[in-house]
Length: 427
View 1 (cartoon, rainbow, N blue to C red):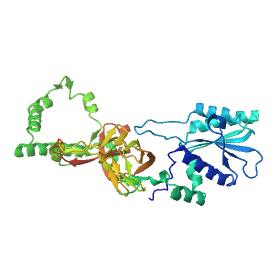
View 2: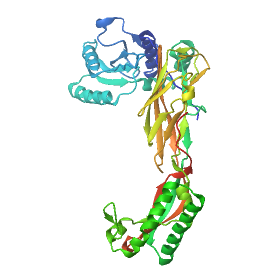
View 3: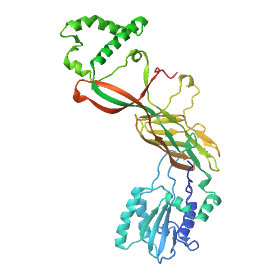
Protein backbone atom coordinates (compact mmCIF):
# COMPACT_ATOMS: atom_id res chain seq x y z
CA UNK A 1 0.00 0.00 0.00
CA UNK A 2 1.47 3.34 -1.04
CA UNK A 3 1.44 6.07 1.58
CA UNK A 4 -0.87 8.94 0.59
CA UNK A 5 0.70 12.37 0.09
CA UNK A 6 0.89 14.25 3.36
CA UNK A 7 0.95 18.04 3.23
CA UNK A 8 2.04 19.72 6.44
CA UNK A 9 1.22 23.21 7.69
CA UNK A 10 3.80 26.00 7.89
CA UNK A 11 5.54 26.54 11.21
CA UNK A 12 5.25 30.35 11.29
CA UNK A 13 2.26 32.64 11.00
CA UNK A 14 3.69 34.72 8.15
CA UNK A 15 3.99 31.68 5.87
CA UNK A 16 0.55 30.46 6.88
CA UNK A 17 -1.08 33.81 6.05
CA UNK A 18 0.69 33.94 2.68
CA UNK A 19 -0.51 30.41 1.84
CA UNK A 20 -4.05 31.34 2.91
CA UNK A 21 -4.02 34.45 0.71
CA UNK A 22 -2.85 32.55 -2.39
CA UNK A 23 -5.17 29.55 -1.82
CA UNK A 24 -8.34 31.61 -1.28
CA UNK A 25 -7.39 33.73 -4.25
CA UNK A 26 -7.90 30.56 -6.29
CA UNK A 27 -10.95 29.34 -4.35
CA UNK A 28 -12.74 32.70 -4.76
CA UNK A 29 -11.33 33.19 -8.28
CA UNK A 30 -9.76 36.56 -7.42
CA UNK A 31 -6.00 35.81 -7.50
CA UNK A 32 -5.09 39.47 -8.09
CA UNK A 33 -7.78 41.23 -6.06
CA UNK A 34 -7.44 39.42 -2.73
CA UNK A 35 -5.20 41.25 -0.26
CA UNK A 36 -3.99 41.45 3.33
CA UNK A 37 -5.74 43.85 5.65
CA UNK A 38 -3.40 46.85 5.79
CA UNK A 39 -4.06 47.39 9.48
CA UNK A 40 -2.30 45.34 12.16
CA UNK A 41 -3.07 44.01 15.61
CA UNK A 42 -6.36 45.07 17.20
CA UNK A 43 -7.06 47.53 14.37
CA UNK A 44 -7.60 44.63 11.98
CA UNK A 45 -10.98 44.01 13.62
CA UNK A 46 -10.77 40.22 13.28
CA UNK A 47 -9.85 40.21 9.57
CA UNK A 48 -6.37 39.33 8.23
CA UNK A 49 -7.35 38.97 4.54
CA UNK A 50 -10.32 40.40 2.65
CA UNK A 51 -11.81 40.80 -0.82
CA UNK A 52 -15.03 40.58 -2.80
CA UNK A 53 -15.07 37.08 -4.38
CA UNK A 54 -16.05 36.70 -8.02
CA UNK A 55 -19.84 36.91 -8.55
CA UNK A 56 -20.34 38.29 -5.01
CA UNK A 57 -21.34 41.83 -4.01
CA UNK A 58 -20.15 41.99 -0.39
CA UNK A 59 -16.79 41.65 1.33
CA UNK A 60 -15.56 38.30 2.62
CA UNK A 61 -12.94 38.18 5.36
CA UNK A 62 -10.45 35.60 6.61
CA UNK A 63 -9.01 35.29 10.12
CA UNK A 64 -5.84 33.11 10.23
CA UNK A 65 -5.00 30.89 13.20
CA UNK A 66 -1.71 29.01 12.81
CA UNK A 67 -0.50 27.38 16.02
CA UNK A 68 1.59 24.28 16.63
CA UNK A 69 -0.68 21.45 17.73
CA UNK A 70 1.92 19.85 19.97
CA UNK A 71 4.79 21.04 22.08
CA UNK A 72 7.79 18.73 22.28
CA UNK A 73 6.65 17.06 25.49
CA UNK A 74 3.13 16.38 24.37
CA UNK A 75 1.26 19.44 25.63
CA UNK A 76 -1.71 19.95 23.32
CA UNK A 77 -2.83 23.43 22.27
CA UNK A 78 -6.41 23.88 21.10
CA UNK A 79 -8.53 26.35 19.22
CA UNK A 80 -11.33 27.18 21.66
CA UNK A 81 -14.89 28.47 21.51
CA UNK A 82 -13.75 31.53 23.47
CA UNK A 83 -11.22 32.41 20.75
CA UNK A 84 -13.86 31.96 18.04
CA UNK A 85 -16.29 34.21 19.94
CA UNK A 86 -13.62 36.88 20.33
CA UNK A 87 -12.77 36.90 16.62
CA UNK A 88 -16.45 37.04 15.61
CA UNK A 89 -17.05 40.03 17.88
CA UNK A 90 -14.05 41.83 16.37
CA UNK A 91 -15.25 41.09 12.83
CA UNK A 92 -18.62 42.69 13.57
CA UNK A 93 -16.75 46.02 13.69
CA UNK A 94 -15.13 45.57 10.26
CA UNK A 95 -16.14 48.17 7.68
CA UNK A 96 -17.85 47.69 5.34
CA UNK A 97 -19.78 44.87 6.92
CA UNK A 98 -18.89 41.29 5.97
CA UNK A 99 -20.98 38.76 4.07
CA UNK A 100 -18.86 35.87 5.38
CA UNK A 101 -16.00 35.30 7.82
CA UNK A 102 -13.63 32.36 7.27
CA UNK A 103 -11.59 31.14 10.22
CA UNK A 104 -8.62 29.44 8.58
CA UNK A 105 -6.59 27.27 10.94
CA UNK A 106 -3.76 24.74 10.87
CA UNK A 107 -5.50 22.69 13.57
CA UNK A 108 -6.97 19.32 12.65
CA UNK A 109 -10.73 18.84 12.42
CA UNK A 110 -12.72 19.33 15.61
CA UNK A 111 -16.32 18.12 15.48
CA UNK A 112 -17.30 20.03 18.60
CA UNK A 113 -16.17 23.35 17.10
CA UNK A 114 -17.90 22.57 13.82
CA UNK A 115 -21.16 21.96 15.69
CA UNK A 116 -20.65 25.20 17.62
CA UNK A 117 -20.22 27.14 14.37
CA UNK A 118 -23.42 25.63 12.94
CA UNK A 119 -25.35 26.91 15.95
CA UNK A 120 -23.76 30.37 15.57
CA UNK A 121 -24.71 30.49 11.89
CA UNK A 122 -28.37 29.79 12.65
CA UNK A 123 -28.39 32.74 15.06
CA UNK A 124 -26.55 34.96 12.56
CA UNK A 125 -29.02 34.16 9.76
CA UNK A 126 -31.93 35.24 11.97
CA UNK A 127 -30.08 38.41 12.97
CA UNK A 128 -28.79 39.28 9.50
CA UNK A 129 -25.14 38.90 10.55
CA UNK A 130 -22.37 37.39 8.40
CA UNK A 131 -21.97 33.63 8.05
CA UNK A 132 -18.95 31.96 9.67
CA UNK A 133 -16.98 29.08 8.13
CA UNK A 134 -14.14 27.26 9.87
CA UNK A 135 -11.53 25.56 7.64
CA UNK A 136 -9.18 23.12 9.37
CA UNK A 137 -5.90 21.85 7.91
CA UNK A 138 -7.64 18.89 6.26
CA UNK A 139 -9.47 21.45 4.10
CA UNK A 140 -6.17 23.17 3.23
CA UNK A 141 -4.50 19.87 2.35
CA UNK A 142 -7.36 18.84 0.07
CA UNK A 143 -7.68 22.23 -1.64
CA UNK A 144 -3.92 22.67 -2.18
CA UNK A 145 -3.92 19.50 -4.28
CA UNK A 146 -6.83 20.80 -6.39
CA UNK A 147 -4.75 23.73 -7.71
CA UNK A 148 -1.49 22.67 -9.37
CA UNK A 149 0.01 26.14 -9.25
CA UNK A 150 -0.56 26.39 -5.48
CA UNK A 151 0.72 22.87 -4.83
CA UNK A 152 3.89 23.43 -6.87
CA UNK A 153 4.52 26.80 -5.25
CA UNK A 154 3.94 25.52 -1.74
CA UNK A 155 5.84 22.24 -1.92
CA UNK A 156 8.71 23.15 -4.23
CA UNK A 157 9.44 26.85 -4.07
CA UNK A 158 8.73 28.05 -0.57
CA UNK A 159 10.94 25.83 1.64
CA UNK A 160 8.08 25.33 4.07
CA UNK A 161 7.68 22.43 6.49
CA UNK A 162 7.30 20.06 3.54
CA UNK A 163 11.08 19.85 3.82
CA UNK A 164 10.42 17.64 6.85
CA UNK A 165 8.44 14.47 6.34
CA UNK A 166 8.25 10.96 7.78
CA UNK A 167 6.77 7.70 6.63
CA UNK A 168 5.66 5.55 9.56
CA UNK A 169 4.99 1.90 8.74
CA UNK A 170 5.46 -1.68 9.84
CA UNK A 171 8.91 -3.20 9.39
CA UNK A 172 8.03 -4.30 5.83
CA UNK A 173 7.24 -0.70 4.78
CA UNK A 174 3.49 -1.35 4.70
CA UNK A 175 0.91 0.61 6.67
CA UNK A 176 -1.46 -2.36 6.80
CA UNK A 177 -0.87 -6.05 7.47
CA UNK A 178 -2.92 -9.24 7.78
CA UNK A 179 -2.47 -11.96 10.40
CA UNK A 180 -4.19 -15.37 10.55
CA UNK A 181 -3.93 -17.02 13.97
CA UNK A 182 -4.95 -20.71 14.09
CA UNK A 183 -7.53 -22.06 16.53
CA UNK A 184 -9.36 -25.32 17.07
CA UNK A 185 -12.97 -25.43 15.89
CA UNK A 186 -14.65 -28.29 17.71
CA UNK A 187 -17.91 -29.75 16.49
CA UNK A 188 -19.17 -30.90 19.87
CA UNK A 189 -21.77 -33.63 20.27
CA UNK A 190 -23.47 -34.11 23.65
CA UNK A 191 -24.97 -37.61 23.95
CA UNK A 192 -25.56 -40.58 26.25
CA UNK A 193 -22.68 -42.96 26.93
CA UNK A 194 -23.21 -46.49 25.69
CA UNK A 195 -22.43 -49.57 27.78
CA UNK A 196 -19.60 -50.47 25.39
CA UNK A 197 -18.08 -47.01 25.87
CA UNK A 198 -18.27 -47.36 29.65
CA UNK A 199 -16.34 -50.64 29.40
CA UNK A 200 -13.88 -49.06 26.97
CA UNK A 201 -13.25 -46.18 29.40
CA UNK A 202 -12.65 -48.54 32.31
CA UNK A 203 -10.23 -50.63 30.21
CA UNK A 204 -8.30 -47.49 29.19
CA UNK A 205 -7.77 -46.50 32.82
CA UNK A 206 -6.61 -49.98 33.73
CA UNK A 207 -4.14 -49.95 30.83
CA UNK A 208 -2.83 -46.55 31.86
CA UNK A 209 -2.31 -47.73 35.44
CA UNK A 210 -0.25 -50.76 34.30
CA UNK A 211 1.92 -48.57 32.05
CA UNK A 212 2.62 -46.17 34.88
CA UNK A 213 3.59 -49.05 37.16
CA UNK A 214 5.86 -50.74 34.60
CA UNK A 215 7.63 -47.51 33.58
CA UNK A 216 7.66 -45.97 37.09
CA UNK A 217 6.47 -42.61 35.77
CA UNK A 218 5.00 -39.70 37.68
CA UNK A 219 5.08 -40.98 41.22
CA UNK A 220 2.29 -38.70 42.36
CA UNK A 221 -0.06 -40.28 39.79
CA UNK A 222 1.09 -43.72 40.95
CA UNK A 223 0.08 -42.77 44.45
CA UNK A 224 -3.33 -41.74 43.18
CA UNK A 225 -3.79 -45.11 41.45
CA UNK A 226 -2.51 -47.00 44.51
CA UNK A 227 -4.94 -45.06 46.69
CA UNK A 228 -7.73 -45.89 44.29
CA UNK A 229 -6.70 -49.55 44.38
CA UNK A 230 -6.78 -49.66 48.17
CA UNK A 231 -10.27 -48.21 48.42
CA UNK A 232 -11.68 -50.08 45.43
CA UNK A 233 -12.91 -52.95 47.60
CA UNK A 234 -14.61 -50.51 49.96
CA UNK A 235 -16.25 -48.76 47.03
CA UNK A 236 -17.66 -52.07 45.82
CA UNK A 237 -18.89 -53.26 49.21
CA UNK A 238 -19.93 -50.02 50.96
CA UNK A 239 -23.15 -48.10 50.54
CA UNK A 240 -21.30 -44.83 51.10
CA UNK A 241 -17.71 -43.72 50.67
CA UNK A 242 -16.67 -40.19 51.74
CA UNK A 243 -13.75 -38.25 50.30
CA UNK A 244 -13.34 -34.81 51.87
CA UNK A 245 -16.87 -35.16 53.21
CA UNK A 246 -18.38 -35.91 49.79
CA UNK A 247 -20.07 -39.23 49.08
CA UNK A 248 -18.59 -40.17 45.71
CA UNK A 249 -21.20 -42.90 45.27
CA UNK A 250 -24.12 -40.52 45.62
CA UNK A 251 -26.25 -39.69 42.61
CA UNK A 252 -25.67 -36.00 43.26
CA UNK A 253 -21.88 -36.42 42.99
CA UNK A 254 -22.09 -38.60 39.89
CA UNK A 255 -24.31 -36.04 38.16
CA UNK A 256 -21.88 -33.26 39.07
CA UNK A 257 -19.15 -34.94 36.97
CA UNK A 258 -21.27 -34.56 33.81
CA UNK A 259 -21.01 -33.55 31.07
CA UNK A 260 -17.66 -35.28 30.75
CA UNK A 261 -15.49 -35.67 27.70
CA UNK A 262 -15.02 -38.96 25.93
CA UNK A 263 -11.42 -40.11 26.37
CA UNK A 264 -9.35 -41.84 23.74
CA UNK A 265 -8.27 -45.46 24.10
CA UNK A 266 -4.80 -44.31 25.15
CA UNK A 267 -5.04 -41.76 27.96
CA UNK A 268 -1.39 -41.93 29.00
CA UNK A 269 -0.23 -38.94 26.89
CA UNK A 270 -2.81 -36.75 28.59
CA UNK A 271 -0.90 -37.27 31.84
CA UNK A 272 2.64 -37.45 30.52
CA UNK A 273 2.85 -34.53 28.10
CA UNK A 274 3.46 -31.07 29.45
CA UNK A 275 0.92 -29.24 27.30
CA UNK A 276 0.49 -25.46 27.17
CA UNK A 277 -1.92 -23.23 25.27
CA UNK A 278 -0.69 -21.86 21.99
CA UNK A 279 -2.18 -18.38 22.21
CA UNK A 280 -1.12 -17.56 18.63
CA UNK A 281 0.74 -14.42 19.56
CA UNK A 282 1.98 -12.27 16.69
CA UNK A 283 4.35 -9.33 16.68
CA UNK A 284 5.19 -6.19 14.78
CA UNK A 285 7.74 -3.39 14.81
CA UNK A 286 7.11 0.27 14.03
CA UNK A 287 9.46 1.79 11.48
CA UNK A 288 10.04 5.52 11.03
CA UNK A 289 11.65 6.67 7.80
CA UNK A 290 12.79 10.22 7.17
CA UNK A 291 11.59 10.78 3.62
CA UNK A 292 11.98 14.55 3.74
CA UNK A 293 14.89 16.86 2.99
CA UNK A 294 15.91 17.81 6.55
CA UNK A 295 17.14 16.03 9.66
CA UNK A 296 14.42 15.16 12.14
CA UNK A 297 15.83 15.42 15.63
CA UNK A 298 14.79 15.37 19.27
CA UNK A 299 11.82 13.15 18.41
CA UNK A 300 9.60 10.53 19.99
CA UNK A 301 6.65 8.52 18.70
CA UNK A 302 3.68 7.91 20.98
CA UNK A 303 0.93 5.53 19.94
CA UNK A 304 -2.38 4.12 21.08
CA UNK A 305 -3.47 0.58 20.19
CA UNK A 306 -7.20 0.06 19.68
CA UNK A 307 -9.19 -2.99 18.64
CA UNK A 308 -9.75 -6.70 19.24
CA UNK A 309 -6.97 -8.28 21.30
CA UNK A 310 -6.35 -9.76 24.75
CA UNK A 311 -2.96 -8.32 25.57
CA UNK A 312 -0.10 -6.27 24.14
CA UNK A 313 3.42 -6.11 25.52
CA UNK A 314 7.10 -5.58 24.82
CA UNK A 315 9.26 -8.54 25.84
CA UNK A 316 11.57 -7.70 28.77
CA UNK A 317 15.29 -8.30 28.24
CA UNK A 318 16.83 -11.68 29.03
CA UNK A 319 19.00 -11.80 32.12
CA UNK A 320 22.05 -12.20 29.89
CA UNK A 321 21.11 -8.95 28.08
CA UNK A 322 20.63 -6.72 31.12
CA UNK A 323 24.03 -5.02 30.84
CA UNK A 324 23.69 -4.20 27.13
CA UNK A 325 19.91 -3.88 26.66
CA UNK A 326 18.77 -0.48 25.39
CA UNK A 327 15.13 0.10 26.24
CA UNK A 328 13.54 2.22 23.51
CA UNK A 329 9.95 0.96 23.44
CA UNK A 330 7.42 0.88 26.28
CA UNK A 331 3.82 -0.35 26.54
CA UNK A 332 1.42 0.57 29.35
CA UNK A 333 -1.98 -1.01 28.83
CA UNK A 334 -2.93 0.22 25.33
CA UNK A 335 -0.56 3.17 25.22
CA UNK A 336 2.99 2.99 23.90
CA UNK A 337 6.07 5.11 23.41
CA UNK A 338 9.05 4.70 21.09
CA UNK A 339 11.99 6.97 21.94
CA UNK A 340 15.40 5.73 20.78
CA UNK A 341 18.59 6.94 22.45
CA UNK A 342 19.85 8.03 19.00
CA UNK A 343 17.29 10.78 18.93
CA UNK A 344 17.62 11.93 15.32
CA UNK A 345 17.03 10.53 11.83
CA UNK A 346 19.00 11.83 8.89
CA UNK A 347 17.50 11.98 5.40
CA UNK A 348 16.54 8.55 3.98
CA UNK A 349 17.51 6.83 7.26
CA UNK A 350 15.17 4.80 9.47
CA UNK A 351 14.56 4.02 13.13
CA UNK A 352 12.80 0.82 14.25
CA UNK A 353 11.09 0.02 17.55
CA UNK A 354 11.48 -3.09 19.65
CA UNK A 355 9.19 -6.04 18.89
CA UNK A 356 5.63 -5.43 20.10
CA UNK A 357 3.76 -8.67 20.88
CA UNK A 358 -0.02 -9.02 20.61
CA UNK A 359 -2.20 -11.80 21.99
CA UNK A 360 -5.40 -11.94 19.87
CA UNK A 361 -8.82 -12.82 21.20
CA UNK A 362 -9.88 -16.44 20.85
CA UNK A 363 -11.35 -17.06 17.38
CA UNK A 364 -12.21 -13.39 16.95
CA UNK A 365 -12.12 -11.71 13.56
CA UNK A 366 -11.46 -7.99 13.73
CA UNK A 367 -8.91 -5.24 13.35
CA UNK A 368 -6.32 -3.41 15.38
CA UNK A 369 -5.49 0.26 14.79
CA UNK A 370 -2.23 1.82 15.91
CA UNK A 371 -2.81 5.56 16.06
CA UNK A 372 0.56 7.31 16.24
CA UNK A 373 1.78 10.82 16.84
CA UNK A 374 5.35 11.89 16.13
CA UNK A 375 6.65 14.83 18.13
CA UNK A 376 9.95 16.42 17.14
CA UNK A 377 11.75 19.73 17.27
CA UNK A 378 9.84 22.13 14.99
CA UNK A 379 7.86 19.26 13.47
CA UNK A 380 4.99 16.92 14.26
CA UNK A 381 2.91 14.41 12.36
CA UNK A 382 0.26 11.81 13.01
CA UNK A 383 -1.30 8.82 11.28
CA UNK A 384 -2.56 5.28 11.62
CA UNK A 385 -1.40 1.71 11.02
CA UNK A 386 -3.81 -1.18 10.70
CA UNK A 387 -3.72 -4.93 11.40
CA UNK A 388 -6.49 -7.17 10.03
CA UNK A 389 -7.11 -10.35 12.04
CA UNK A 390 -8.61 -13.22 10.06
CA UNK A 391 -8.45 -16.49 12.06
CA UNK A 392 -7.92 -19.90 10.48
CA UNK A 393 -9.52 -23.01 11.99
CA UNK A 394 -8.54 -26.63 12.43
CA UNK A 395 -11.72 -28.70 12.34
CA UNK A 396 -12.07 -31.26 15.13
CA UNK A 397 -14.71 -33.58 16.59
CA UNK A 398 -15.44 -33.81 20.29
CA UNK A 399 -17.88 -36.02 22.20
CA UNK A 400 -19.28 -35.12 25.61
CA UNK A 401 -21.29 -37.62 27.68
CA UNK A 402 -24.48 -36.49 29.40
CA UNK A 403 -26.87 -38.27 31.73
CA UNK A 404 -30.22 -37.29 30.28
CA UNK A 405 -31.70 -37.45 26.80
CA UNK A 406 -32.91 -33.86 27.02
CA UNK A 407 -29.30 -32.71 27.41
CA UNK A 408 -28.28 -34.17 24.04
CA UNK A 409 -27.33 -31.51 21.51
CA UNK A 410 -24.68 -30.32 19.03
CA UNK A 411 -22.75 -27.06 19.11
CA UNK A 412 -19.56 -25.35 17.95
CA UNK A 413 -16.76 -24.70 20.44
CA UNK A 414 -13.51 -22.83 19.86
CA UNK A 415 -10.26 -23.61 21.66
CA UNK A 416 -6.58 -22.81 21.55
CA UNK A 417 -4.23 -25.39 20.13
CA UNK A 418 -2.27 -27.29 22.77
CA UNK A 419 1.44 -27.70 22.17
CA UNK A 420 4.19 -29.54 24.03
CA UNK A 421 6.46 -27.27 25.98
CA UNK A 422 7.62 -25.98 29.31
CA UNK A 423 7.08 -22.73 31.12
CA UNK A 424 10.56 -21.31 31.50
CA UNK A 425 12.19 -18.28 33.03
CA UNK A 426 13.42 -15.71 30.53
CA UNK A 427 17.12 -16.49 30.99
